[in-house]
Length: 482
Image (cartoon, rainbow, N blue to C red):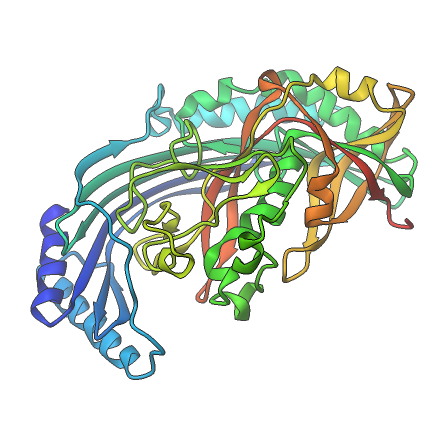
């Protein structure tokens, strides 16, 4: 793989590129879906190729190929240089890259059990045991269990001299139960929705969560929601669990602080952001004093945990919001100079060798507070606790949002008194985070993976994790009639 990468960058440089990098990749994937006791999807795949990115005359060019033949790599490098030369004809200014040291290194995801070493039969057998519990009651019409495993072996080389090899391993699993009766349907998921939870670990993730022990509860809650009252409407105290907090962090902090979006590079596809550089100069308050949001590509188990990003920048940990005050955006070597940053904070990534790297959210966590969940509930006279995301909607400036969860728990005088269905809440990003008055402690903290974050044209998917504990917000608009 290293020889193929050298071949690519040497060719690009010989054709006049002032900078070039190449990512040679072998991507292995396994997906299993069990639906109502039967395997409905089983995919095992492996793909290899190279993506070549160059700068010529101050503009980018990119090309890729799934052939690792030497002549095909040279042709692909030439195509990338030709694209850069054409792009330079309509550039507004030269691309500037923030400096970065040269690295020769190897990094790999640590894990205890290689997920690709576990027999398919063993995985399906475990899924069927859970399915049997989920479908023991007739109101459950659809039970779905997903497992997904991925390994990315990459070599990244640059004309500056870096040669970085990485092997990234990701594992995840989760299930859902859909209950239906008399024209009503409700769903409950574990450990979170949208395919379960995923981490950069091995098959041992199956032991991180009690899949069998929670199946009966998930089933019965889905059924109970069929006859539960609707979510009450009005302003009230809101407690969000970890999985729902992950969505809140992702949409109202993560995307809002991608610097390419802030600068308008993303406006055509996914909107911009209210977090303009002029706000930062005014010491912008993003949330209450309790709010500390940290980007961290060194976070153990995080889906965006690596040794180096696709700029060849070493993984970092940094505050995005510190004690409620905005501190940083997510930058690349190209965008860091726009906000006078001396270096990138390692947020450039691509999905596969066939895509150009773009700014992506790193692992982004709300740091734990000092409260227990019981203390938060006990200190709430009137409120709702919402668990596990079901829907999301946010405007193109990342300001106004409305999110829905799978289940709401009604709180009266410091105690949970019942459940409600179709819970929703809405807010304006800085006002919402400013209303945060309690954050769960380290014992409640977990990292929740997002495996379907779409961005870019052509659209590509990225993965990242959001660490969170249950968190309380005051005076929040809840319900659909508020």
